[in-house]
Length: 241
Image (tube, one colour):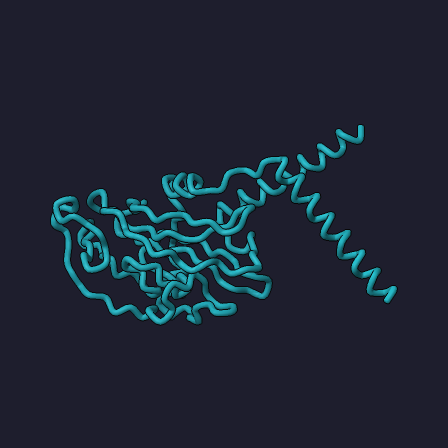
């Protein structure tokens, strides 16, 4: 009977951790609070654009049972012609760092001033624009083959206003990017939006961490109990002195 109770406790804890992990994978703003800031953005090479009217979705840090892990960027077709992607971002609140979801919309909104690169300078998007139901790519900041996008390209050098922030991946808090939304970004935030496409959700899930083995959970609990017992012993020794 005692063994069964112990197993149920570990099973319950496993389910709790996996449930929290699933919430974090969804990335709902306000549902997940992390006390530690995310790591710096990695430097990576953007893959070639696979074809016309694909937009770049920059990679980002998300959070799981073992801590932060990286979700690579991908090329994705907009759910509607004329829509652009506003990346998600980590932002500081009184309780910790919260993840704010990215979204599709007519205009690019606020994404924390984070310099995701490849056209996402921290403000707006310089990687291209829509014209007459066709997307044109800025070859100065996006990796495209002219023939793959039907010669719908142009080249415009980008002055990066977020350059001083380098690879910082979060807004606010200690050492974070100190940028607030512009009037235009506030307007964009109240426009009609579409969330992650089904392909983006699959991509996010594929990057996710593996479930924690039950034996590791048991060991972590055992270590924690030993740490607590050691702390109590030290406290009692201090009182005796």
